Length: 538
Image 1 (cartoon, rainbow, N blue to C red):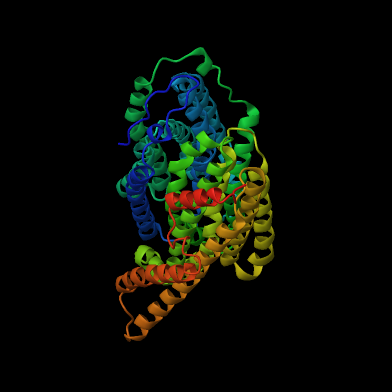
Image 2: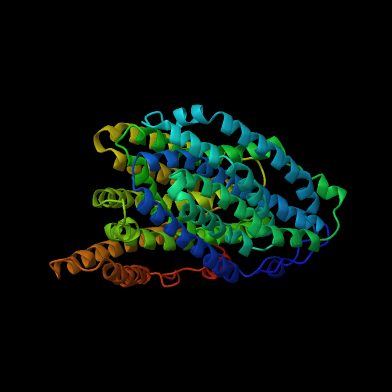
């Protein structure tokens, strides 16, 4: 487990190297656990596709799934982390302990979320009607909503624990929560799907959410015991409404893209919501993994926010290039091999060839928005790291949501479910571009010339790698009358796509050798220092 930072004296900052663990080490440990949780999530979706296929039952479950889908960004990854990590980090920096903050806030959080669970359960029929008015069998969706409503409480506690641990420099237990979550879902489905049907999946979501709390509880208690005594100053740290509302508004607005899909998808053919969901689950994997770096660096970002603007600029530029490298390379692979990926993962049991074909088509459209998804994650953390109320992220994501809604409504009648994927990609990309411009204007003087050039080169490399992967898949298919085995095609693509991506990136960078093909945070820092030494910095 990553070690906690040593206690610091009130009013004094610990050295950066001692205050937080190695970025590489923390990222590697997080990658292992999140990778394992992602793999088990694929197994979960595979089991569901095999057992339930894509139809009215899975559509009903996915309406219920809207509850944890909305609660997760609010209570675990986005709103809770954006709010609590800076708060806990400042408490540790100034007082050497976060115990008073935990004692003051956690009981109130539990009481408020318990009341929310009760309201959701009581209002489940109305909620189903609002979310998916076109469902032909809403009763199953009502049951699923009531079962998944339990996640609101457990997600809130799990997210609070995760934010506290990350502020202490402990990233392994928070990274393990999705592994525990999927263990609960898979185990419950395997045990009870024969008797409960699709409701077993909803019950599994509730069980898994409780395991998310259990896996963090020992480390959470140990971290609080190991800190110094609480003080009145720590207990008085503010957490006002004006600090909470912008973050919640941003998170809900970002998640509302899913609401648009579910609402419009409920009026399409049965199974449309399920096809969108399966494609989205696959498409979001590289985006989630690419954001590991900003999850790990967020406590550091909170430390320098409002201070050295050059250091802040270098951090943002480094994160943006690193995240773009990962997500664009993965997007190229998924776009080239979407049919093979979907066939390998889901073409079993009741998931038909027609289901696989439509899901693969939707996946190719979804990946067009992966860069936008990742950049929204990078930029939103920059805004909220300072702990001040800001409405810019909400406004920018709101503009993206408006674009999503307009495109979806205009195209869904003619193109069906694929139109919703196109709308999603268009809206989130618009939001990302607006947020990057806002960060440069409001937070740090990003250098458009090197950053834009690097992003353009990475996009060119992704396009070339995608084309090479597509040609590889078609060549292998043409060499055999029965077609190459899916696994062989995917393995060949795993060699060709990264190789072409790296080659094109390297060649395009040759005119400016100081910008490396696969940049690192250290490299971006060194570039910035050289620029400042020449007097070119802001």
